[in-house]
Amino acid sequence: MPTRRIARDTFKFLGLEFSRLDFGGQRIYREDYLKHPEKFLSGIDLIFYVIDAQDFDRYIESIDYLEEVLLFFKEYQEDVIVEILFHKFDPQLIDDVEINKRILTLKQALTRYSNDFDIFFFETTIFDIKSVMDAFSSGLSMLFEKMEMVSNLFSEMSKNYNSLMISLFDGKGITLGEYFRPHLPLTQKIKIYEIYLELQKRIAAENRTLFEFSDKFESGERFSGVIEVLKFGNLNFYLLFIVEEDHEDLGKTVSLLDKIEAAKPQMENLIMQIIQ
Ligand SMILES: Nc1nc2c(ncn2[C@@H]2O[C@H](COP(=O)(O)OP(=O)(O)OP(=O)(O)O)[C@@H](O)[C@H]2O)c(=O)[nH]1
Ligand SMILES: [Mg+2]
Image (cartoon, rainbow, N blue to C red):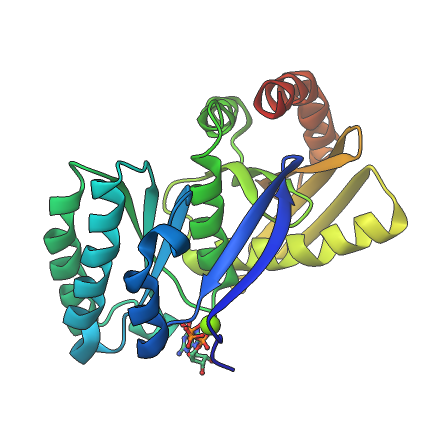
């Protein structure tokens, strides 16, 4: 169902309450927002501007509107982070030359705003929920100083641990930081994230603090994973570690557990710094 006017709700991230406003995109609403921008746009910290990447005929219309919105923020000197989502970038379009070319042209045109705004681009599709979560996580993480330290730490850790993936999630699956082995295929990332979402529900339901698992990609390669729950008061965080499985080495999971244990104090320290 199309959103009528503005749908408002709140959510918590890292213990802070955020207001979320989903602006209905029909023309009459859009006109209304611009008639009273100080009423509708003031105080916004982070914008996700969603463009239907499949609807080439309306790119110009969409960019024109974005320009008017940004003009307001510029005039009122409001600091806002702008995330532009090229949405409906469905899996079968990833290698489509036409859409990639068009998106690239739009990005180039939009760089003219980068003097005034922190502006970021994402290709998203509802058929890859991780793509949507990545865009939202990235935007939210930018509101927190020090958040980048998490990914930096993971990238350092990965050098010692030869991991496929290390991630830290909040209870809703928002990423606080992550490392993927370079060139890890998208299908494998999606697979890991889907498994993670399932397991995370189970871990929460069973009130567990540690969960080990083992699974395989479509290619047949196996991987082992551990999820460790880190608790801070009533906030739970989930540390996910994935390594390739070596069927000759049955001690793999044991050593994986040791690794995740070793990383725990550093991780807890970092989280403390961020949520303070
Ligand atoms: N192919 C494809 N369709 C999508 C995707 N995401 C949403 N849709 C479809 O796009 C249509 C519009 O989605 P909405 O979420 O209502 O779009 P909206 O921008 O919120 O629209 P308003 O509420 O009017 O502002 C629906 O039919 C969705 O199923 C996607 O990633 N790929
Ligand atoms: Mg809507």
